[in-house]
Image (cartoon, rainbow, N blue to C red; front, side):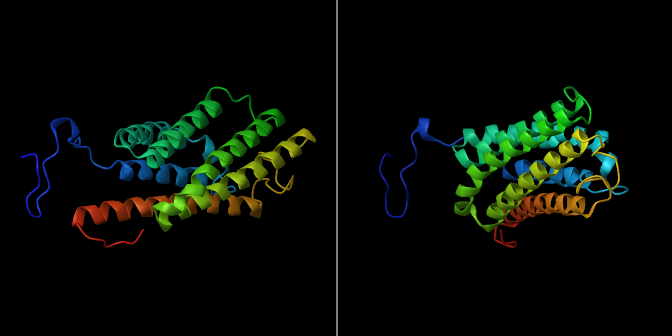
Length: 224
């Protein structure tokens, strides 16, 4: 039983048998994609978004699905030996928890100090995303597209929050006042930021759907 015969492989030793864990990619990508789409809606100008960012739906989704479920998917991926997926899911699962805690418990209001902090927060996550974007091409065009769009999204958020902080510091409430700075409410720039973030989440959702569909039917029905 320790040697292979013909086309048959030798059975693995007891300690080498793989554990029966399914791929966590669908849960991880769905958690990321759906929460990202909600965050994109929150970045649209009023009446489509704006105050929606304070809606419990965004924070609840971020904590439960984007945060906890995606973090758990990352731990499973790391246990299965997938450093790329595991690190990404744990990282962005932690991102959603940090994002929610920051805005719910540690936010001092829409002051210039807070907005500059949000700009720095987005910049750091842009750097984090860059690390994965460099390595994403090995994992297909879908995953590569997700990280490219996400990298652009963090750049746009960095510029947005920095611009709003400058408006607020000059005595104008950049979060609510129409016509104060390029990212004031109802400004076309918010459509660009919100739309780009929604597109990022939509692509992640598609990749997850393709992974689920191809696994379920046992053949490649949807490219990714």
